[in-house]
Length: 245
Image (cartoon, rainbow, N blue to C red; front, side, top):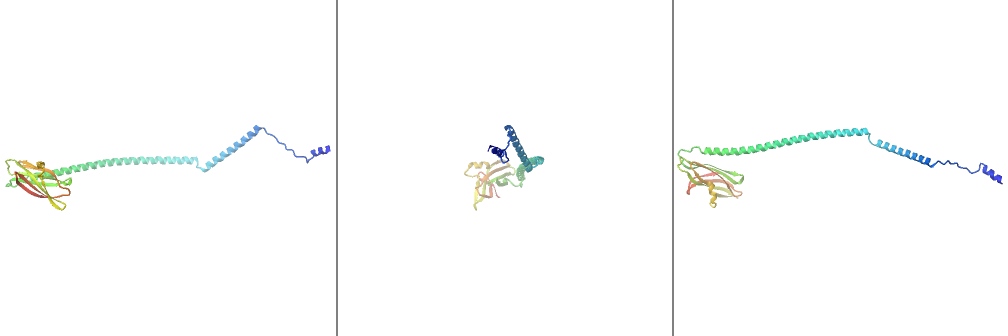
């Protein structure tokens, strides 16, 4: 019986026996580290390959950057040129504007001077000798025109004593301004009898001639039509003339 059991154990039908070689732990850790390192290197390589495949080449990017920088420099140069041109044009416009203002001022001054010369010419023309038989007080010239506003009227009057006067004439100028307001005729007396001080600018005292100037104010909306000018002394009218406006 013992022999049979021994033979069964030594026979081919006996159970298989596995032979395993046990590596030391440090060796197994080293092998695991190498595998992980290879996997990581492979992943980084794949990632870098994917980045390089999906984006432009570095040289192409540098070339594009250089082109953009060149375009930027050209744009800035053009902007500087245009800014200088605008500055020059603005300076030229300021000079031209100043010249226009100066010319307008000179034109106004020349117009004022021309008006003064016309008045002086009319004055000296009025001093031309009258008829030899003429004598006494005469109204040589009279003008009335708007002075800034329609209601303000400026008048200029020249009174002369003809002949060979031996003494000064003393009197006053009286004016009756006829005007239309709201479709109805009216008249304004100058100087105003109710205002004694209004007489002073119209007083006369001269030997040969005297100029009288002043301004009167009409009611709002009034239009002057004519003026009756009288030269009065001691309650007596020495000269009277009507001027249409």
